[in-house]
Length: 373
Image (cartoon, rainbow, N blue to C red):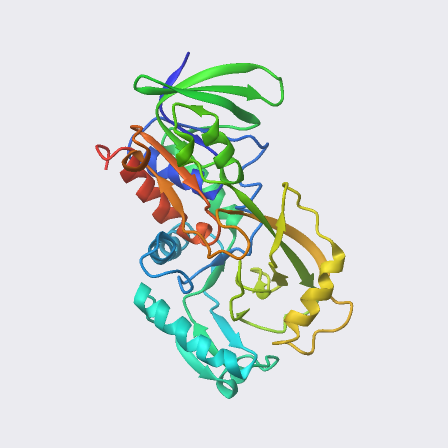
């Protein structure tokens, strides 16, 4: 049975960022991914937004890692020539009573370290985006967009340059803690063959599958495995010349950031995600949900034409909070939490996970192997 320094479960943007970080520290790393390519779930089914760090509770991991990760991500994308754009966004109040909410968003963001937000009057916002309708707005100049697939390919390339190995179509069926190492039982989806591989360190970055994988790790107390809840976010698109040059976000709603407008790097307009709680993983988009989208979008873009929305794709948030509950923070559990040396479990890495990926990778390295950093 082969033994390596570290096994990472999951080749999404978080797993790949961790692999890059650990390979830079000289750790022999294997990335095990159940799908047939990298980043097929949450990492590629999102808005591809580089978030500024605006909405998250003061002192939370989401706030800290988003702000740190945003700076690291802009530096990395510039250094590696990864397609991205610091386009900025407007958070808009469409009702008079929402204006005070905008002021609260600015105050909370400033307490978290985001100091570049600007309150705009309706006239100032509309001067920037003439198709917009609002009562007031907040400008976030640090918000941007990124080609998430190009980012993941770059992270994988650097990890492989450092000696990391990627195993696709491979499922981790179960695992056990055996003395000072982790023994993982795997199955190849292509051939059906099964084998075991051992590692001195283990990072569970399996995204939507992280909770289930942790529950199959013999020796980990189940009390350290939170319950997973699934919230699907649907996206619709509009063809034609873009009506806006910046991202447009409504005031946040429970469970998400509302039906917002994001742009791809070619200027194409996408709207979403909404919040649809589901029991099983299912990426189908019901075209009838567009009925809700029209009403939400027209609050800030009343010129949206009937019949112009087309279902595009959906993503699923790996949530740790139930409907109606406050959004849970990232859970990044190392030995200081569960008592198992050299194990890190990552749960609930929804937005802003993409923005935070490089900062999360550094934190995982610190909790996983402090002697390496």
